[in-house]
Image 1 (tube, rainbow, N blue to C red):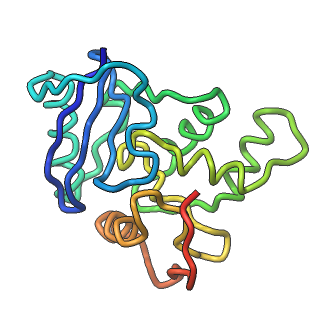
Image 2 (tube, rainbow, N blue to C red; image 1 turned 180 degrees about the horizontal axis):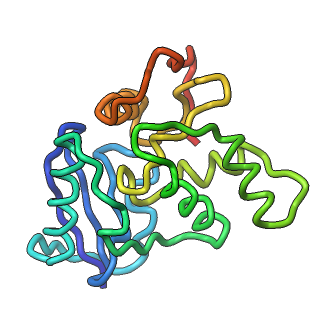
Image 3 (cartoon, rainbow, N blue to C red; image 1 turned 60 degrees about the vertical axis):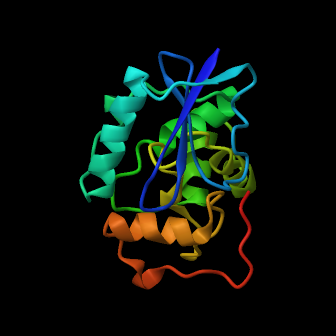
Length: 179
C-alpha cells in the first residue's frame, strides 16, 4: 500500500508519496513521469508522520535554508543504475551545479567502465522520483545549458535562484528537452 498527499509550494502544487516508512515520490504538478514509481494501490493520507516531516523540510528549503537530505528517509524505486545516479545527485552541494558529463564520469568509474554516456545519465536524472529533495535541478549541460528538468525549465530556474546559484553562466537552450 502506498500513501499520497499534496502540499502547496512556491513552485506549484507538490504530490508526496510514501510506502508508510520512506518517501518514495515527490512530484511537481504536471511533471514528466509523475507517479511512475507507484505500482500498487494508493490511498490519500495527509496525516502520515513522514509527510509532516517532509513538509517541514520543504518549508525550510523554500525559506532559503539548506536542510539536510539525510533528515528524510528516502526510498526511490528504480534500477540499481538509477539509484547510483540519484545517490550522486544527493552529493551535489546546495547552491552548486554539476554537468551531466561529470556524473557520467563518476558512474563509469564506480562501475569500472571506460566511459558512460551523458544521455544515460540524463535518463536517470529525468526519472528521479523525489524531485527537489534529490536535487536533479542542480544538473546542467556541460556548456551551462539549463536543459533536462522533468518539472519544467522555469521551475529549475526558480529552484537554482532560490539556492543562490550564479545564473550568469547558465542559459535556457532554444529547444529544451527533458529526458
